[in-house]
View 1 (cartoon, rainbow, N blue to C red):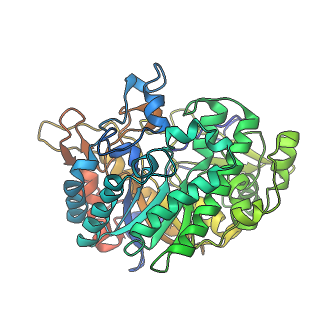
View 2: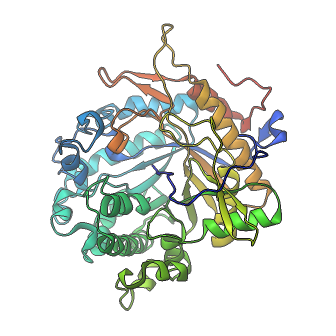
View 3: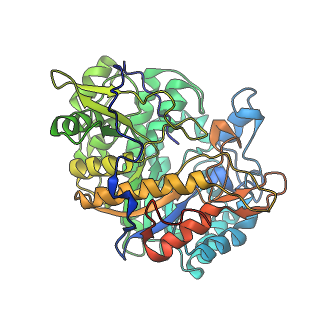
Length: 485
């Protein structure tokens, strides 16, 4: 999940700043193409639990959670949603909703407890069962190989700062591809390197909890090398023709107005590296897709830039079939007097979600459009959603009207991106279940399905019923349409 804080100096907000929606067409229903892919998403550590079951080895998140003061409330992923044991129920819920595609990740340490070498057959067999259950339910699996839960044994060998990790990742990928590629054709290599490297090696708010710029640059370079190696392995070993992508994250810039100057300012800032930090797009995506680090990033990092050895860029730049974009919010940008991009802050009282991210639905118009224009890869929205103040009401239901309202706004803006010319192939709502939200523990609820973490009871929220109808019809109701259930 992204951290949308910005250290950019803000000018005073304009009194004519756009509304939340900014789209007069929202009064009308919005229809998506019939072949549009509708799905939901999760990740292994956030929902599986069973941390010490059937031979799973510890990950860096297991160790981090047990360090006092690191995770809200001392929460851990030891049990999480217990998806490891309850996956048949969870798949049945998705089937009842009409989910067409499910994005999930594999736990590296469940499959290779020491990170390399010995394969844990029981752990690998879990994903066999999960994939078979999904296919039997008519749900297409979209498999992410790595979503932040590095085996602890590999951390002790240097983790992402060790160049050998590219080959370790390739070995892990080979085990998974050899086992599942007779049924899985949609693959993602890694999720949000900006976060697991930036928070882990720079801010220190995720494992391994370091704060070293030099370490983060080496770790980021090796993460991209690992992405490249995984992509190579998928293509060389898959039993069915694979469709390969990845799922990075970055700052999404929204033009303050529809003027050509503001649009260009937003585009320019979205693809700039302006400070020695990782929450940007080009430091990762330019090497992976264009084959070179961005020049402004090299200037910003200077002598601390990573050691790029012969063959590195060729390894990092692998053919990709789609770009997985994780977008939750955005920042408004206008052209200054000299054309220089300026951040326009949201005004007092502007809505925020429960996790305090700005409500900015038009991020899902401009983010996919700008990414398509720069990289020319089909866009899949691999994460989008919000944390809400959700609980089970006295009538036994979960009335999350805010999730319905904001998701409708997001989706209408996504359709506008497609009208603008962006090739967008699908949308995955984060998340199917309330789950372990990393350093925030169980405090934040992103799910379409409520989970009582004392009893593990699942209760589909009103948003699950609403989203089921959107997936069934391909139509997002207009502002005057029915938004509750």
